[in-house]
Image (cartoon, rainbow, N blue to C red; front, side, top):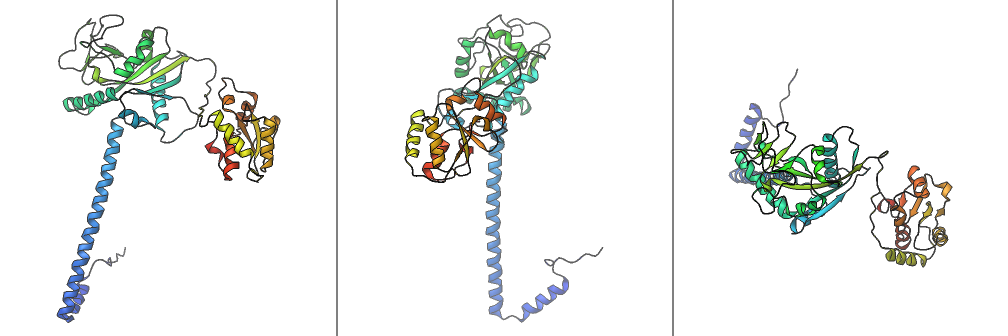
Length: 403
């Protein structure tokens, strides 16, 4: 193998030539050369300093992100604002067919859903229909401080929260999510059934089937973050006993019940709605109403006054539901602006279904909507037509499609 010398590494002969050349320079030329070398060194130092600052900035950003992730601060749209208010905010989450990378809403829903399904009794036949993600600023603040205190006391590994279920009467859910749980010694604390087989605390289970009997006929269950810390495992019943000295929580002999004694160690995060499963699962549509009926009517009236154009050329439409005007009038508007119309029997690829919001909210899809969905035809709100005609811009259907 032949190695070649790097052009940046000077050989002995190069150094000798450099010394000889330098010796031939006049005093003024030597000073100028030294000055240029000093300036080049200074410039390089400045560039290195700027690079160092940029690296430090990036590292700080990364540390902030890692801290947010470790603290569970995967923020939904509007959650930051909710944390700055005093009242509780609930974010409704539903199952979505499309996978949206980076969607905090989907991550929260799937986390709660998977926790329910993974640890529910096999063959129970229950199905999660909706999840409410709860943000109560004061309760979150207390929990984060308690987590920090636990980390300082017990170390990093014993400061991580556990997701656990709590069953309670349906009337208790809103007060709990707003104000947090009550623990022994606090005003308002009481056991719903007994004094506490494994200690006088608040009972949780990672297994939803353990918590469901306490719901008393409801269909909602709480999923919380709890801080077990150092856990005392009970070997037998210890009715109504206080927290064992030197520990932060208790667990039942089979480890399926977790007893928390400090209310600051509990963060109610999710309200899971569930039902008995009947038949195959079907996604419910997520309907975002961006314009009222009156706003759509005004848009239509403006579009109807526009002179004929070719803005809808290449597009074919079919109409469904009660729109801003009679279907015949809107079909005339489509043709006026270069579009084509299709019959119900022609609802297949290449056709766009323009549907009323009320049509999409029906519990049982209409024939037209079902045909369009089966043919994977885009179903859009009527303002797609009007906006395109009024602005004379070829707006994409993605901004108007019903998901």
